[in-house]
Length: 499
Ligand SMILES: [Zn+2]
Image 1 (tube, helix red, strand yellow):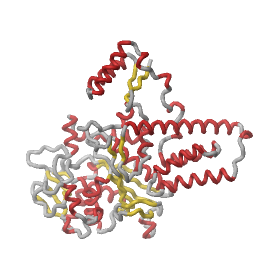
Image 2 (image 1 turned 90 degrees about the vertical axis):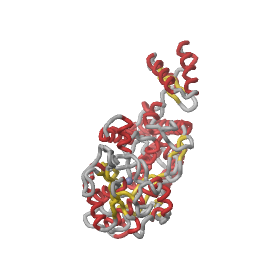
Image 3 (image 1 turned 45 degrees about the vertical axis):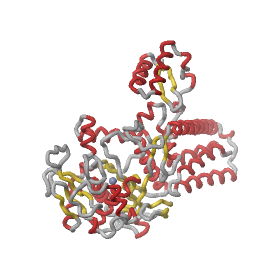
Image 4 (image 1 turned 180 degrees about the vertical axis):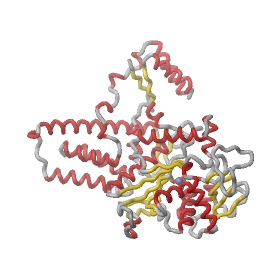
């Protein structure tokens, strides 16, 4: 299996640590230890997050297919992630709490639940272990104390305990030892008293007058809390040991979060490398722009469902782009993906039905030819060669369409599609006719609506054009009261009669 490693900036042959340096006592020789940076639970999980976790999921599925026993640990950041990468600004949890008028603890629970709800809908396998930062305060504190004892830290009064990056010769390997990259990312100078611009907080102190909800006593300050990076090092080491095979995250984590994770972990354990492979997922743009609440292009899985799309269509859209490329999401591309998904599902269900009929009448089945067997074998190998080549899912999908077009028997096609779906995770095996789209008969044309509703429909179109979404939603409610559901699509609005 080939995998791109941000550390070497190359596609490398994937070998686990044990495969390279020999088996470790009491450990399964096929074990792969993987740590994935998880969500900061201060707001709703959006489709940009979903892309990252879908691709983590594909990585886990491909490794398992290749025979590895993957132990996948994922954290839940429910404390300590400050708004700025430069260890300044408000804690995201406290910010979320203020914004939603609930306590930081309530917010953490609410958005952790929403995260898993979204993951399940997307067909993402749950991690082997999910761990909360707030439940690992003592191991984080213990790590900082050891780093202090080893001479890697200094205290800035009223600020926190900082890691002195000049004490670590190898600092910044992920960014080619180019400190300017950390500086740009961390917006240097926001904290006064740092010895080196790239130094970062291990432990933070509550500011005078600030009444934080999440604080713990520490030897330096009675009301203090962990820095963001330390949680990933502490939980990874606690649950997976001093060295891991794979660490994943978004490309936005390379310059600061992951660079600092490496620094503090390797200084703490004295072992190199902390992670053998660093896998980074690229961004999802929406209509060519970065997703943000202010641009009104921040979509959750519920927004996707409400617009009449199935999560499998979104998953297929993510798979159609390579994880290391930026992907641009539009509702037009999601519509195309949904059409493709339904075409695949329809074909799969037809193949399944025909196969069942054949199985009931074995005499009707033509014996499979050597040529067909070879063809099936070739397609199977092609598919896995693509996914094992740095998760090349777009090429792997082309093999799926080739199977549908091929002359293979229904049984062969059926087996291949299910085998592929163990990697793609679209969930075909659990699907039935009921998962196909609503048939056109249930859709209503505008000009057949009662006149008052036709008028309202036009008013809503105007409101939508003028971006008056409050009015558009009010009219949608009126339609619902009359037994009609409005489904907003990119280029049209579908009207479904529910009566
Ligand atoms: Zn992390």
